[in-house]
Image 1 (tube, one colour):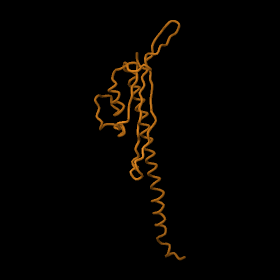
Image 2 (image 1 turned 60 degrees about the horizontal axis):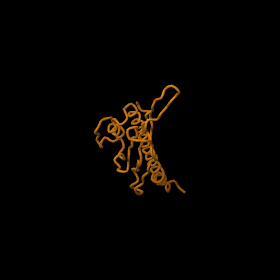
Image 3 (image 1 turned 90 degrees about the horizontal axis):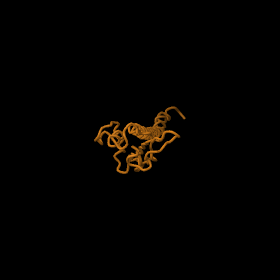
Image 4 (image 1 turned 90 degrees about the vertical axis):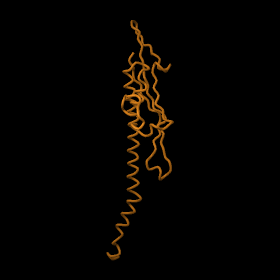
Length: 158
């Protein structure tokens, strides 16, 4: 073959590789990064909220804790426009707070030694039914992943 018949072959091959291999690979990497960011944010907010409630008296400031979870700010009421993740607006998504004020499971645990008896209060923050929707799922149909429940338990002040 002569050189003249090969002039456009490299451009065609590059276009095929870009369109069918590299661009989908880039989109998959971006979606995976967003998925990991959403999960990391969810876990961090559950721990941060439970830590905040661990220094509050049982039953107090639950509304501020929910705002802290959703927006990162312990103020009440909170604005839904300030949510850290847009999936927090999903009606199936739940943030549950359990402590000795609202849960028989978290009623004061007795700890005793031979001479001293005391109580331990626990607070648990759980996030359930978090659904992550892929940005590029509109091309392939509505794809979503539902995370398993995430929770954190801390010792609460007496």
